[in-house]
Amino acid sequence: MLQKENILIVDDDINILELIQRHLQSLHYHTYKAVSVKEAIVILRDTEIDLLITDLKMPEVDGFQLIKFAAEHYPTLPKLVVTGYPSVQDELSVIKFGAVDYLVKPFTKEELKKSVLKSLPLEKNKKTSTANKQTKKYNEIIGESEAIKNVTQIIDRVKDNKATIYISGESGTGKELVARSIHYNGKFSRAPFIAVNCGGIPENLLESELFGYIKGAFTGANDNREGFFQAAEGGTIFLDEIGNASLAVQSRLLRVLQEKEIVKVGARKSEKIDVRVIAATNSNLKEMIAKETFREDLFYRLTVVEINVPPLRERKEDIALLADKFLLKYGNEYKDRYITIDSEAKALMQRYNWPGNIRELENVIQRAVIMCDRTIGIKDLPESLKYQIDFPKDDLLSLKEIEKKYIEKVLAATDNNQTKAAEILKIDRKTLRSKFKK
Picture 1 (spheres, rainbow, N blue to C red):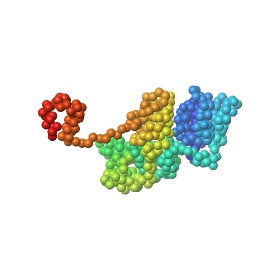
Picture 2: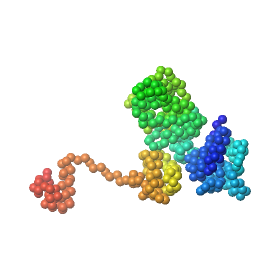
Picture 3: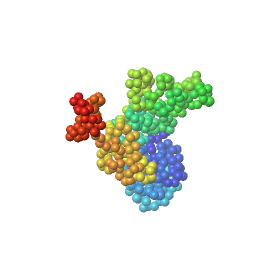
Picture 4: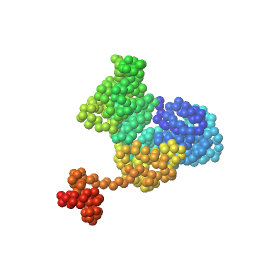
């Protein structure tokens, strides 16, 4: 039976790392691997980990510093130390910082199992610990706002069943992250997750890509081919931008949801499938239904469970957490460019409404990491984030009115000297007087 615990293993020795992973997977634990402390911290920040297993002797940054870091940043996280160089002093040091057990290499699978069971909290303690966490992380979904907590609560409800789910939200809010979180945090996580951008596939190809085709079904169909639905068998298919699907494809999708079977293009026989369908769009499907560009019966089949992903302007308390995540991400990607954000820049980021949502925030942080040296200040943020003066728009005037206003402007600039004004306007004084009278 698959365990719920996520275990992070940290060791610079790839062979030991893979050996521990094989042992733990045979005991049905979820495992994450890191070959350095830097990689381990990234995983800790982005994933809910139930047990940290780390070596002590590692190059650059050693396991002692990781133990200290985890003790202060994740005080309820149990820690298990494995080492090939045991010493009483080391053992006392790691226990001081909360290590539950100390395992000496080489060790057997049974010894590892015993230490893991000893290190993991009892079920009742685990439940208490989980309840006390302020922020629960689902893959890369980060936030402490009520708006995002509502989303994660629904994920908890639906992750272990195959009800059809519809995710709505503006572009850049992270709809695919929500879909991945539903899949990878549930009991079907070992089955495939297939993401399909319905807006990125030409309309005449979408049907064959989704359902597959048989040889000779159309020009260029030289053999039989499976579609995305068959590839997702047992798992989840994520249909992004479902509003772009043609009415013909919508009709086929409706049959899939009703009958749990698909028919390849050109085939006569249907095939049973076992797939959870998650659909998403930033379009208003109800407006599309009113315009008869989206099927109403399909809409109700898709929306067994609805999740609305809030825009960033409705969860501003999460901006700092998301910014820290992207600072770490691009600090690693651009080779140790770890920088901070000053208070003025943070205040500006909190004030801005982020029409591009999380995607826009990530782009801003990525650019700042590249362009600045130590601290992101207001000068490092794009002009679009800064205060803008909303000048009143000029009224649309007739040519006669525009001419009148311009003549008045030139006369005012020349102190009503008609000779100078006529020179500027490149007309004679007689013509100027005539226009002035009119």
